[in-house]
Image (cartoon, rainbow, N blue to C red; front, side, top):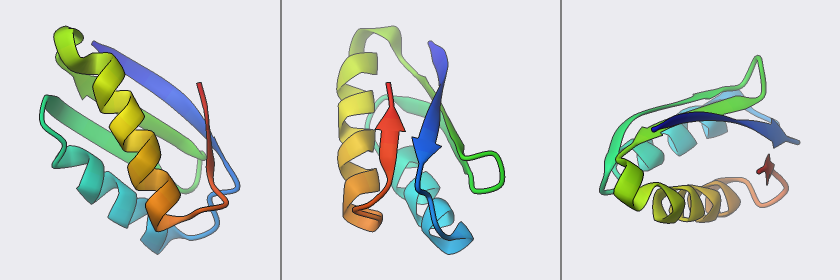
Length: 72
């Protein structure tokens, strides 16, 4: 399953790169991208674990940039 999410208050391109790298390492993720310019995140993950992958991605984002919010 592939899905896009809007990010609010993503303040730096370096943080976006760190988020993308961390999300790609989550088990079940096939691909991921975090765009600072468009303030969007795309996750492509296995259907069976998609919800848990998204939950873990939200935790990763909060850890890297606490002010950034994922619009689900």
